Image (cartoon, rainbow, N blue to C red):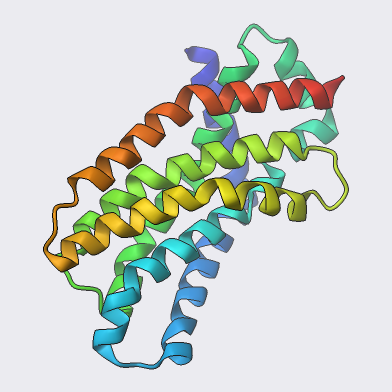
Length: 221
């Protein structure tokens, strides 16, 4: 556990020292969401109806920005080989790095959702459920992205391959995340959507680190 926490702390320290990934994701999220009123029109009712979908799509794309560097730097300087030979299982190494990625990108995106929701005229009664859906869904995006980053490690144009590999797997998260928030706006029961998101997170927590660790072992051979 001490090694796991130390690895998360190391990745967070490196991310804050570089200062680019989290800020880039938030700026992309805010700018991309701000473009939609220019494209579909400024009508408040129209924006309120599609706000949850806009926020989820832009958050998903923003979370992809830093995924191609999740293991790349450690792979290039040999740190990944040392981590693979350490006492900490490689699956926990993957989980620690995915957790650090979520803390650097996912949490700021959730916080940035509040002003973006106001900009898009989202109903304030829908905002807590939208934040809850993002709280459940963004860790899944990081975990699935970790699998894609491991499988494309060392590949040419790995960022493009990563997007092509990861985006289809993240579509169910997008669907249930938006559906849960929209159900609240329509006055329907939203418990099923959030339970599905929670179940997907519970499945991704053990499965994705094992899949990503297998990909890393293949890349290190």
